[in-house]
Image (cartoon, rainbow over all chains, first blue to last red):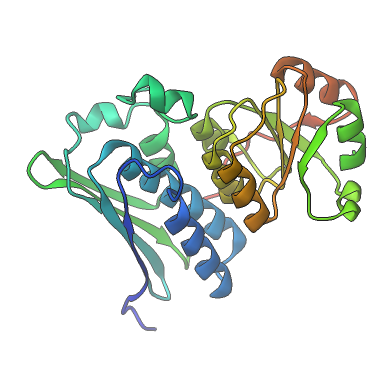
Length: 144
Length: 124
């Protein structure tokens, strides 16, 4: 069985671009469908990627999203260039959000983003610092 | 319930729909929400979203969870970008003058059940 991962998506995400925000997640969803990934996995991957992509749009100075696939797992990497998450524990608390009223009026900032990602991911690793931005790595199992 | 009946109960205006055949689309359950993360967090497979939000991210959210129909409540008209994205993704858009609570109540009373709150099954 091949464990080597193949890159299937790499896309830049612009800060505060609410028109194109979500396109990378949409692209990934379509790619996974074409690869024949089961629909329940496609759906949870779409939710995870979309939450992370919108986090970059809403909270960061811009970043990129990369997806890699092997026979066993799907790896999603979302990297931004700052300003970093001040308190990671709080960021994983349901209902906690630092989003502005303007963002909330658009339907975001419910404080469920990373909570959702953690719920659906099989593994999650978040590193964040002021100097280096936020780096999220999510693993979704494809084989049991 | 057929989409045709939903449209009639809520007296909707059509903003975008692919073809008239879609009146036969079966709407089994629905959700009403103004927070997109709640739609992503608590929703299972469903067909209909009632919301007061009109920006393109509503259509994106619908795409991610497989919602086919969006009804904007309180007589709101969506942004042109929202309509254009819905067109691209083949998601139908309607508007109703009714507020969210009343629109949900009318559909519930007439037989559309609540969505199942089961989370997506994971391998954990």
